[in-house]
Length: 463
Image 1 (cartoon, rainbow, N blue to C red):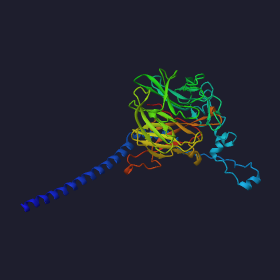
Image 2 (spheres, rainbow, N blue to C red):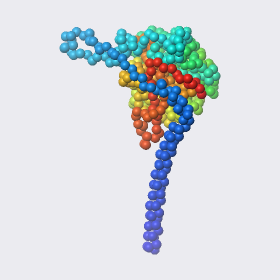
Image 3 (cartoon, one colour):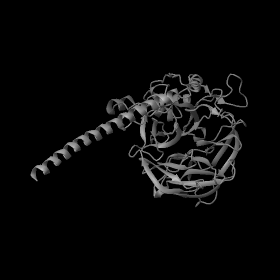
Image 4 (cartoon, rainbow, N blue to C red):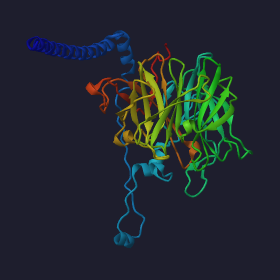
């Protein structure tokens, strides 16, 4: 009995070893297959539609050229009494950003030139060209008032609609320590077929003059309006940041309309998921689901949550993103099944460094890819070309190519804030490695290219 009992155990042990080795071999084989499959997928994506890809590359090559920017700044001269300087020492000279924000500075004038983009009086040498930072006029010859906004393409009318804050009012401070502000005028809407000549459709959501308890009372804050279309209800739904003058309300507001040109009916405000909400945007995915992305927890992190089917509220599901990174001004877009986002740092009206992020699921996790800005110079790249992100607009005829929309804020005169529209492309290796093992998934670089003067290539509207 003893001999019989020992042999089966040895046999069982050998079988276990063999099966363990087989299982290990199978696991390693699967891992190798995953690596090979990913490699072949990358090769396939590179080869797929190579003819169309080469055409697109030739079209976009000019816009992807790195354009350098040089400018001279007059050294700052102290006006302090020499005795005071010897006694207390020289004060730290102002930075370029300080000079940019100082309306009396020559640097400020450099970034807020008097030249205009006038679609009604443009010769062949300037037709359809974008000039970031110049005064952009509508087809009535008046400066466009659509700050912190976004663009909706309406399939029914085959028209682009640009919504944004109308800041055509006096800039002032509500109190000595308050931020520069303009009383709420409302949300303006402009229409265009070519993304260059814009027709003023008027104020589609008006501020409230008399009722001081209303969210849209002129003394409050309305920022970053965005509009999406609900295919199920046939409604145009607007979401926006609603706040009081001290930025303590920290809420979102919702409005709705039957037409892209309004009027929009204001519905209500709330704190989504019972959380603070300041800078925000909304994003409509290919499957018709829509999402709200907003800065929360004193702007220390971003939150994202799905909207209800009618886009009039948020669902209970929420995820926290980029925790502790202090990001705002999110602009979310999608390419080739991957979600991308450009964000800004939190420095009030002062420009700062943009960061690009990516995810395979819109609900995260999100990885940071680095600064997307290309060209200009080090100062330009570290200040997002002296602007702040607001929206990224896809170009239907050029897959992987977008327009990066940003605001160049002028806090001393907010109505004179300018628009910085630049080409954005997806491709290449990102600056920062993702946290995933084996670098899978392999993110592509987000690149925003600086150009003093540029235009969209022919064929951008081809679907």
